[in-house]
Image (cartoon, rainbow, N blue to C red):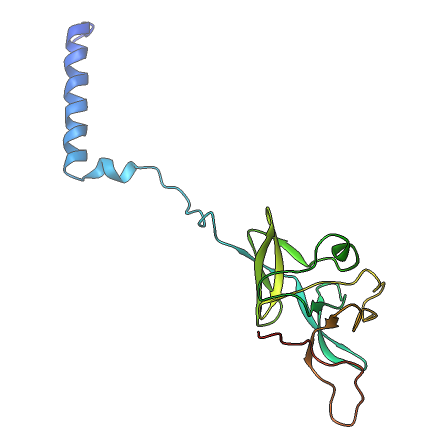
Length: 175
């Protein structure tokens, strides 16, 4: 058995040979390429996350209406245009806009969308009509804002024949 220590110069030759071998394997697409680190795929940064913000609720005298996920009635404003709100300032104090963040895709029924209200706030829409709650509604199933100041509760399906209704569907204003 040879007990002589490896000289520094000989060690350098061994290192060069090892590096050259590895480079050759990588160039040929061999074993060394299998040691690349793997990373979990991240979802695209701009992909919206679905969030239930709207529900369809039956309210006596109105039939099926749109509500927030917590049961508060949703309204449209007759003076709004498609994907544009005419309610600003003190109007928003009485009629808070239903808003979501930029990365939220509102779900809960068909026809929901959103538009940029300001900065990072997006207002939820129903078939292009901006949606609002009413500050005077204090409990779920309350629709005390219907017909007040050109606001109307959003009726999805009217009551069955023979039952009375105290509202009409929101005006279309061309949408």
